Amino acid sequence: MLQINVIREDKQQVIAALKIKNFDAESIVERILEVDMQRRSTQKNLDDTLAESKAMAREIGDLFKSGQQDKANVLREETAKSKTLTKELQDKLAQLESEQESLLVLLPNLPHESVPAGKTPEDNEVVEQEGEIPVLEAGGLPHWDLCSKYDIIDFELGTKITGAGFPVYKGKGAKLQRALISFFLDEATNAGYTEYQVPLMVNEASAYATGQLPDKDGQMYHIALDNLYMIPTAEVPVTNLFRDIILQESQFPIKSTAYSACFRREAGSYGKDVRGLNRLHQFDKVEIVQLTQPEKSYAALEEMRIHVTGLLRKLGLPFRILRLCGGDVSFASALTYDMEVFSAAQKRWLEVSSVSNFETFQSNRMKLRYKDKEGKTTLAHTLNGSALALPRILAALIENYQYEGGIRIPEVLVPYTGFDNIS
Image 1 (cartoon, rainbow, N blue to C red):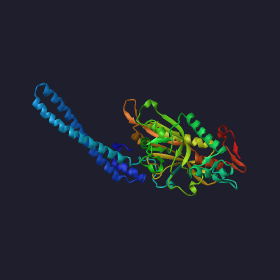
Image 2 (cartoon, rainbow, N blue to C red):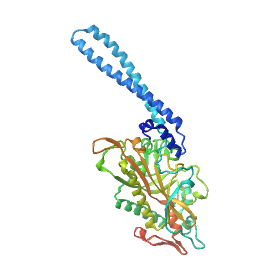
Image 3 (spheres, rainbow, N blue to C red):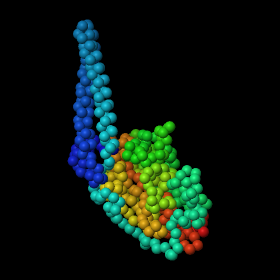
Image 4 (cartoon, rainbow, N blue to C red):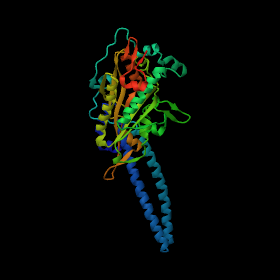
């Protein structure tokens, strides 16, 4: 959530910046400032009324002590009116604060100055590419056919049990999945991230704090009876570990990681681009999260980007890094890098990670603050990234490492799988 003082200081800059995200903020910003002016005026009137009430209470006490009961009783009648006015002002203030917040949550985060203009993924900027694009020999198969051929993932069985987008991993497929999770977690902890095992459901306050609500309400699985949400990523519970906390600057950077299943409705997704593992309703992912000082957050973002590309390099997958354009960067993010791997059989790039800096957008919602060396309380910056999401990594590995007699396992994973091929 944007800080109100940012909007107050330069509303035109806020409006112009959000146009890069293709968001017309003018009417909302004007209403926010109008409500803010009323709120501040009401707050001043309330403060003045409370101060007058305290002064009258002291005067009444002094009058009673000096035996001037008649004057004291007259003032008592005035305090009764003051109490009524105080209640009216408190109610009005609460209403204005609620309206202001309901408007503020409609505004996306401001994009970083480096975010390119654009409306679609085609406008994203390629900032780096590494590795040779693999070319399959004749007879090469897409991963969904390989999964069936070697009986490692059963898409139809998952549809029978639950529905489309919920595959069943079997035998060496399940072990390869577990191997990837363990490898990613070990790499994260070796890089200084503290591992957590977090709930797969969160309450409304948690989903609101990280920006999923109200923006992504329709994309989340909601358990109405308990008013809980299935997590779309471990980012949500991990970041909320620090909600409503005042940290010390000496604690930074705080680096956390967690493996979790992730749940996304993906409403409206269909066609060849969602076949097989390309887009699922339930999938596994290892997430990395950092909390740090504002002046160090973009260095932290670069560090996280290097960490993710290091994983792809160790897996031997060709990858490229995209800086997302304004129309493709998420509601809550200030700057996002997407990492994509090349799928040999599908002959296209598949997104496997997003690494984002949210600056103070999440911390303002969740009241995540720290005290600096001078004792001043400041909002922290939050960052997160996929390190990595498994479905498309697995799809690329299966396709790119296939050979006539089976599928080779990348050398770095063999200690985790206990086998070096699937045949």
